[in-house]
Length: 278
Image (cartoon, rainbow, N blue to C red; front, side):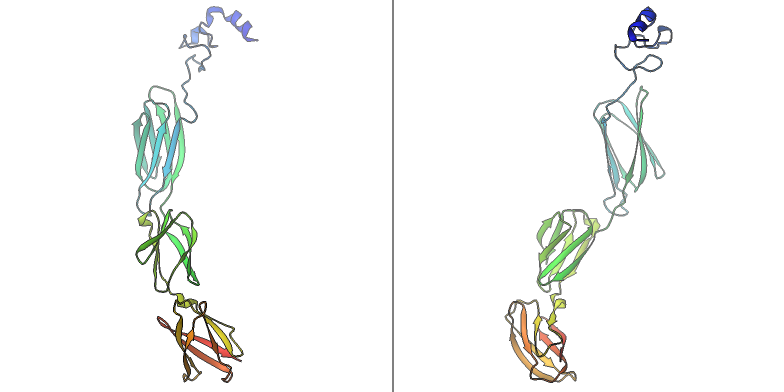
Protein backbone atom coordinates (compact mmCIF):
# COMPACT_ATOMS: atom_id res chain seq x y z
CA UNK A 1 0.00 0.00 0.00
CA UNK A 2 1.51 3.34 -0.99
CA UNK A 3 1.33 6.52 1.12
CA UNK A 4 -1.48 8.08 -0.97
CA UNK A 5 -3.73 5.07 -0.46
CA UNK A 6 -2.92 5.10 3.30
CA UNK A 7 -4.03 8.76 3.54
CA UNK A 8 -7.31 7.95 1.76
CA UNK A 9 -8.04 5.07 4.11
CA UNK A 10 -6.97 6.82 7.28
CA UNK A 11 -8.83 10.06 6.68
CA UNK A 12 -9.24 11.92 9.97
CA UNK A 13 -8.12 8.86 11.97
CA UNK A 14 -4.52 10.23 11.88
CA UNK A 15 -4.80 14.01 12.13
CA UNK A 16 -1.04 14.67 12.43
CA UNK A 17 -0.08 12.21 9.69
CA UNK A 18 2.58 10.44 11.72
CA UNK A 19 1.29 6.93 10.94
CA UNK A 20 -0.19 6.41 14.43
CA UNK A 21 -4.00 6.33 14.56
CA UNK A 22 -5.68 8.89 16.77
CA UNK A 23 -7.09 6.41 19.27
CA UNK A 24 -3.57 5.20 20.23
CA UNK A 25 -1.71 8.46 19.53
CA UNK A 26 -0.59 10.05 22.83
CA UNK A 27 0.84 13.05 20.92
CA UNK A 28 -1.73 13.85 18.18
CA UNK A 29 -0.14 17.16 17.11
CA UNK A 30 3.42 16.26 16.19
CA UNK A 31 5.10 18.15 13.37
CA UNK A 32 5.06 16.61 9.91
CA UNK A 33 8.17 14.52 9.26
CA UNK A 34 9.11 14.10 12.91
CA UNK A 35 10.30 10.66 14.04
CA UNK A 36 7.84 9.18 16.54
CA UNK A 37 7.59 6.14 18.76
CA UNK A 38 4.75 3.61 18.86
CA UNK A 39 2.66 6.06 20.88
CA UNK A 40 3.01 8.82 18.31
CA UNK A 41 5.35 10.98 20.41
CA UNK A 42 8.52 12.54 19.06
CA UNK A 43 11.59 10.45 19.77
CA UNK A 44 14.17 12.52 21.67
CA UNK A 45 17.61 12.40 20.07
CA UNK A 46 20.93 14.17 20.23
CA UNK A 47 23.66 14.58 17.58
CA UNK A 48 26.08 11.65 17.39
CA UNK A 49 28.92 14.00 18.34
CA UNK A 50 27.02 15.74 21.14
CA UNK A 51 29.37 14.45 23.86
CA UNK A 52 33.13 14.87 23.93
CA UNK A 53 34.78 12.83 26.65
CA UNK A 54 38.43 13.04 27.64
CA UNK A 55 39.97 10.47 29.97
CA UNK A 56 43.28 11.35 31.66
CA UNK A 57 45.41 8.86 33.55
CA UNK A 58 47.44 9.34 36.71
CA UNK A 59 50.29 11.81 36.44
CA UNK A 60 52.54 9.45 38.43
CA UNK A 61 52.15 6.08 40.21
CA UNK A 62 50.05 6.25 43.38
CA UNK A 63 48.82 9.81 42.79
CA UNK A 64 45.21 8.69 42.19
CA UNK A 65 44.57 11.88 40.23
CA UNK A 66 43.03 10.52 37.05
CA UNK A 67 40.09 12.50 35.69
CA UNK A 68 37.47 12.69 32.97
CA UNK A 69 36.12 15.79 31.20
CA UNK A 70 32.63 15.69 29.63
CA UNK A 71 31.45 18.45 27.29
CA UNK A 72 28.03 18.63 25.52
CA UNK A 73 27.26 20.56 22.33
CA UNK A 74 23.58 21.03 23.22
CA UNK A 75 22.61 22.33 26.65
CA UNK A 76 20.13 20.16 28.59
CA UNK A 77 19.69 19.08 32.16
CA UNK A 78 21.95 16.04 31.99
CA UNK A 79 22.62 13.54 34.72
CA UNK A 80 25.65 11.25 34.66
CA UNK A 81 26.45 8.12 36.61
CA UNK A 82 30.03 6.89 36.86
CA UNK A 83 30.58 3.29 38.02
CA UNK A 84 33.84 1.40 38.47
CA UNK A 85 36.57 0.42 40.95
CA UNK A 86 34.00 0.37 43.77
CA UNK A 87 32.75 3.89 42.97
CA UNK A 88 29.27 5.06 42.06
CA UNK A 89 29.16 8.81 41.38
CA UNK A 90 26.19 10.87 40.18
CA UNK A 91 26.46 14.43 38.88
CA UNK A 92 24.16 16.90 37.10
CA UNK A 93 25.40 19.28 34.42
CA UNK A 94 24.24 21.28 31.41
CA UNK A 95 27.24 21.69 29.11
CA UNK A 96 30.42 20.62 30.93
CA UNK A 97 31.62 18.71 33.99
CA UNK A 98 34.91 17.27 35.29
CA UNK A 99 35.32 14.30 37.63
CA UNK A 100 38.73 14.04 39.31
CA UNK A 101 40.57 11.97 41.90
CA UNK A 102 40.10 8.71 40.02
CA UNK A 103 42.19 5.57 40.59
CA UNK A 104 43.52 3.64 37.58
CA UNK A 105 40.67 1.32 36.52
CA UNK A 106 38.01 0.71 33.87
CA UNK A 107 34.86 2.79 34.31
CA UNK A 108 31.38 2.98 32.77
CA UNK A 109 29.78 6.38 32.29
CA UNK A 110 26.05 6.71 31.51
CA UNK A 111 24.28 9.98 30.69
CA UNK A 112 20.54 10.67 30.82
CA UNK A 113 18.42 13.77 30.12
CA UNK A 114 15.82 14.94 32.65
CA UNK A 115 12.28 14.39 31.38
CA UNK A 116 13.38 12.54 28.25
CA UNK A 117 13.67 8.90 27.31
CA UNK A 118 17.41 9.02 26.66
CA UNK A 119 20.31 6.95 27.94
CA UNK A 120 23.83 6.78 26.45
CA UNK A 121 26.74 4.89 27.99
CA UNK A 122 30.50 4.92 27.46
CA UNK A 123 33.30 2.71 28.72
CA UNK A 124 36.83 4.02 29.25
CA UNK A 125 40.03 3.37 31.18
CA UNK A 126 42.01 5.59 33.50
CA UNK A 127 45.62 4.57 32.95
CA UNK A 128 48.07 4.17 35.80
CA UNK A 129 50.97 6.59 36.13
CA UNK A 130 54.47 5.56 35.16
CA UNK A 131 58.01 6.41 36.21
CA UNK A 132 60.64 7.83 33.90
CA UNK A 133 62.66 5.11 32.18
CA UNK A 134 65.69 5.62 29.98
CA UNK A 135 69.40 5.02 29.54
CA UNK A 136 72.53 6.80 28.39
CA UNK A 137 75.67 5.61 26.64
CA UNK A 138 78.95 7.32 25.82
CA UNK A 139 80.75 7.35 22.48
CA UNK A 140 83.71 9.68 22.11
CA UNK A 141 82.64 12.95 23.72
CA UNK A 142 78.94 12.49 23.09
CA UNK A 143 76.25 11.03 25.31
CA UNK A 144 73.43 9.19 23.54
CA UNK A 145 70.12 9.31 25.42
CA UNK A 146 67.33 6.80 24.83
CA UNK A 147 64.04 7.44 26.66
CA UNK A 148 61.72 4.45 26.93
CA UNK A 149 58.99 6.05 29.03
CA UNK A 150 58.34 9.62 30.11
CA UNK A 151 56.33 12.74 29.35
CA UNK A 152 57.82 15.15 26.80
CA UNK A 153 59.25 17.73 26.49
CA UNK A 154 62.50 16.49 27.99
CA UNK A 155 64.99 18.87 29.56
CA UNK A 156 68.73 18.13 29.50
CA UNK A 157 70.76 19.66 32.31
CA UNK A 158 74.57 19.57 32.53
CA UNK A 159 76.24 20.67 35.75
CA UNK A 160 73.05 22.44 36.82
CA UNK A 161 72.57 24.36 33.54
CA UNK A 162 69.78 23.57 31.09
CA UNK A 163 71.32 23.00 27.66
CA UNK A 164 68.50 21.41 25.67
CA UNK A 165 64.72 20.92 25.59
CA UNK A 166 63.41 18.37 23.11
CA UNK A 167 60.34 16.35 22.17
CA UNK A 168 62.47 13.51 20.78
CA UNK A 169 62.95 10.24 22.71
CA UNK A 170 66.41 9.65 21.22
CA UNK A 171 69.10 12.32 20.95
CA UNK A 172 72.79 13.09 21.49
CA UNK A 173 74.48 15.77 23.58
CA UNK A 174 78.11 16.91 23.84
CA UNK A 175 79.71 16.12 27.21
CA UNK A 176 83.05 16.40 28.99
CA UNK A 177 84.67 14.11 31.49
CA UNK A 178 83.25 14.67 34.97
CA UNK A 179 80.01 16.33 33.81
CA UNK A 180 76.83 15.64 35.77
CA UNK A 181 74.17 14.85 33.18
CA UNK A 182 70.47 15.00 34.12
CA UNK A 183 67.41 14.39 31.94
CA UNK A 184 64.02 15.44 33.33
CA UNK A 185 60.50 15.02 31.97
CA UNK A 186 57.66 17.54 31.89
CA UNK A 187 56.27 16.01 35.12
CA UNK A 188 58.63 16.18 38.09
CA UNK A 189 57.21 13.20 39.96
CA UNK A 190 58.10 10.85 37.09
CA UNK A 191 61.71 11.03 38.22
CA UNK A 192 64.85 11.72 36.19
CA UNK A 193 67.86 10.11 34.53
CA UNK A 194 71.14 11.10 36.18
CA UNK A 195 74.64 10.11 35.18
CA UNK A 196 78.19 11.17 36.06
CA UNK A 197 80.16 11.25 32.81
CA UNK A 198 83.32 9.14 32.80
CA UNK A 199 84.80 9.43 29.33
CA UNK A 200 87.87 7.47 30.29
CA UNK A 201 85.86 4.26 30.37
CA UNK A 202 85.89 4.51 26.59
CA UNK A 203 89.72 4.44 26.24
CA UNK A 204 90.67 2.00 23.47
CA UNK A 205 93.99 0.59 22.26
CA UNK A 206 94.69 -0.60 18.70
CA UNK A 207 96.08 -2.67 17.23
CA UNK A 208 96.31 -4.87 20.27
CA UNK A 209 98.23 -7.19 20.05
CA UNK A 210 100.71 -5.20 17.97
CA UNK A 211 104.17 -5.63 16.42
CA UNK A 212 105.38 -2.59 18.30
CA UNK A 213 103.55 0.60 17.39
CA UNK A 214 100.05 1.10 18.74
CA UNK A 215 97.55 3.91 19.27
CA UNK A 216 95.61 4.79 22.39
CA UNK A 217 92.38 6.73 21.81
CA UNK A 218 91.55 8.88 24.82
CA UNK A 219 88.87 11.59 25.12
CA UNK A 220 90.84 14.55 26.46
CA UNK A 221 91.25 18.22 25.61
CA UNK A 222 94.90 18.17 26.68
CA UNK A 223 97.59 18.60 24.00
CA UNK A 224 100.02 16.36 25.87
CA UNK A 225 99.65 13.65 28.49
CA UNK A 226 102.18 11.78 30.58
CA UNK A 227 102.27 8.01 30.21
CA UNK A 228 104.41 5.25 31.70
CA UNK A 229 105.06 1.76 30.32
CA UNK A 230 105.51 -1.07 32.82
CA UNK A 231 106.48 -4.71 32.27
CA UNK A 232 104.52 -7.64 33.64
CA UNK A 233 106.53 -7.44 36.90
CA UNK A 234 105.45 -3.85 37.50
CA UNK A 235 108.85 -2.35 36.64
CA UNK A 236 108.83 1.03 34.89
CA UNK A 237 110.65 0.78 31.56
CA UNK A 238 109.69 4.13 30.05
CA UNK A 239 108.05 7.40 31.13
CA UNK A 240 107.41 10.22 28.70
CA UNK A 241 105.07 13.02 27.57
CA UNK A 242 103.05 12.13 24.48
CA UNK A 243 101.44 14.50 22.01
CA UNK A 244 97.67 14.09 21.68
CA UNK A 245 96.66 14.21 18.02
CA UNK A 246 92.88 14.09 17.30
CA UNK A 247 92.28 12.38 20.65
CA UNK A 248 95.01 9.74 20.12
CA UNK A 249 98.59 9.14 21.22
CA UNK A 250 101.14 7.02 19.39
CA UNK A 251 103.30 4.65 21.46
CA UNK A 252 106.02 2.19 20.46
CA UNK A 253 107.30 -1.07 21.98
CA UNK A 254 109.46 -2.08 19.00
CA UNK A 255 112.69 -2.06 21.06
CA UNK A 256 111.23 -4.22 23.81
CA UNK A 257 110.73 -8.00 24.05
CA UNK A 258 107.45 -9.64 23.16
CA UNK A 259 105.06 -9.92 26.08
CA UNK A 260 102.40 -8.20 28.15
CA UNK A 261 102.82 -4.56 29.21
CA UNK A 262 100.80 -2.14 31.26
CA UNK A 263 100.46 1.50 30.20
CA UNK A 264 99.53 4.10 32.82
CA UNK A 265 97.98 7.29 31.48
CA UNK A 266 98.14 10.27 33.83
CA UNK A 267 95.12 12.41 33.00
CA UNK A 268 92.41 13.66 35.40
CA UNK A 269 92.63 10.20 36.91
CA UNK A 270 95.14 7.42 36.36
CA UNK A 271 94.06 5.00 33.65
CA UNK A 272 95.73 1.62 33.11
CA UNK A 273 95.45 -0.32 29.84
CA UNK A 274 96.97 -3.67 28.94
CA UNK A 275 98.86 -4.07 25.67
CA UNK A 276 100.45 -7.09 24.08
CA UNK A 277 103.51 -7.10 21.85
CA UNK A 278 103.99 -10.16 19.67
